[in-house]
Every structure is written in structure tokens, then in C-alpha cells.
Image (cartoon, rainbow, N blue to C red; front, side, top):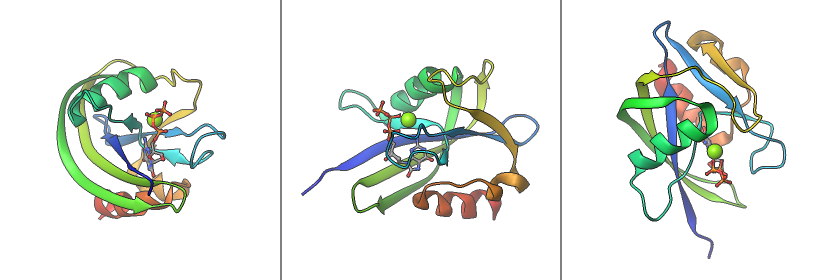
Length: 129
Ligand SMILES: Nc1nc2c([nH]c(=O)n2[C@H]2C[C@H](O)[C@@H](COP(=O)(O)OP(=O)(O)OP(=O)(O)O)O2)c(=O)[nH]1
Ligand SMILES: [Mg+2]
């Protein structure tokens, strides 16, 4: 039986109400699709510690405050994920793809034009209403 992967995910919104998305490198699971930045929660850390660490490592942002948004369990067949998703509206720094990935600030109304992993459909429903 394969283990579920616990992932801390940030829906990062700036003062113009734009959302930060990043393109997953092709060689990764769900590669080539756009995602909300985040990554695996390590055994030694809380979800919020993981989120702070991942957003610094991946997109160069210093998180100040987060609020729980939703939790999603999804089975991709080859991988089971538990996405622990938080709003991030309070942060500092300039967003940069520090792992070479493309990052983009997108108007909410434009988000549906991007291809996301299947599990993200519920996130889009929630934030777009
Ligand atoms: N970050 C993120 N991951 C997502 C989203 N939607 C979704 O299904 N996932 C899945 C894809 C991956 O299977 C998993 C995240 O794992 P990952 O490999 O990117 O984790 P990581 O950033 O810690 O990367 P790694 O260096 O440990 O490999 O969650 C999303 O919006 N953001
Ligand atoms: Mg990641």
C-alpha cells in the first residue's frame, strides 16, 4: 500500500487580488501543469512551518500570516496526496521561480485558462465561487 503524501499548499494573493501560480517542471509528478506553490511536509515540521519553508525555497516569498482554506484528498492512481491548503495574503518579497520554474501573478478571472492537476478543481471552485 502506498503512503499518502502530505503537501502544504499556498494560495498567495497580492494587494491587487492576483494569485501566484507556478509551472511544475516536466519531469515531476503532474509535470507541465500549473500549481499553487508548496511542497511536502517533512516529519519534523508542522504544516505551517512547511508552507513557510517551501514558499521561501520555491518562490522567494517571506510568509507573514496564513489562514486555512481547505483540505483535499486525491488519488492520482500513481500517488495519493493530501493537500493542506492555506490562504497567504500577508507576505513580503518579490516572487521569483527559484527552482527555474515559470511563475505568474494571474487575475482570478483568468485562472481557469491554466491547466492544473485534477485535485485543484475543488480549489478553483472554492476561490472563484
Ligand atoms: N505544490 C502543489 N502540489 C500539488 C498541487 N496540486 C496537486 O495535485 N499537487 C500534488 C503534486 C505532487 O504530487 C504533490 C506535491 O509534491 P512535490 O513533489 O511538488 O513536493 P515538493 O515541492 O516538496 O518537491 P520535492 O522537492 O520534495 O520533490 O502534490 C498544487 O496546487 N500545488
Ligand atoms: Mg513543490
